[in-house]
Length: 178
Image 1 (tube, one colour):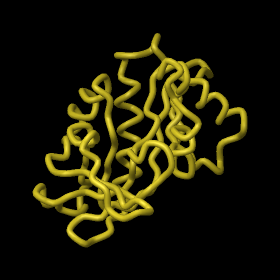
Image 2 (cartoon, rainbow, N blue to C red):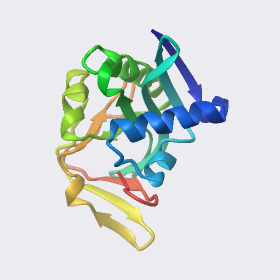
Image 3 (tube, rainbow, N blue to C red):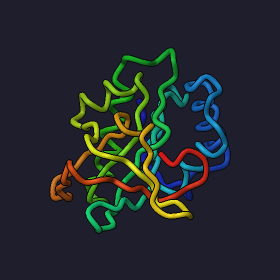
Image 4 (spheres, helix red, strand yellow):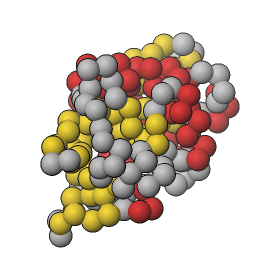
């Protein structure tokens, strides 16, 4: 197994195509162009076995407003493992590398998890955010009740302490905000 961590700017066009193909297959074609765009501009973890891409994840910077403070947040995107390589530890390998990036560069980690992915994140110490979730939309703050219960946070050593009674408002972006 070969694991590489690299910024989007360091990935060749062919590597980005491999990542997109992996994501399309892993999400059964339910990975939109906007979803791929959300995964770019930060750090990627690529795991290869015998030269073939078998797992991926990325972390991008987001701003999260909490208790009137804008937090530099490492937001995890596009975590996927090839279907024929699942349950072999590749997801843990990807997350360990992403958490290392978050721990060095951010005060908070966050992600939105599917039901299928939730177990991985919980097993690594990520926690479901118990409070309200929102976004800072072009029209002002908007609550996102559909994201409550599927948004996870992780505080790296030396990171920020969150007030669970407070709301997390994520910066706006096109497509799915979270």
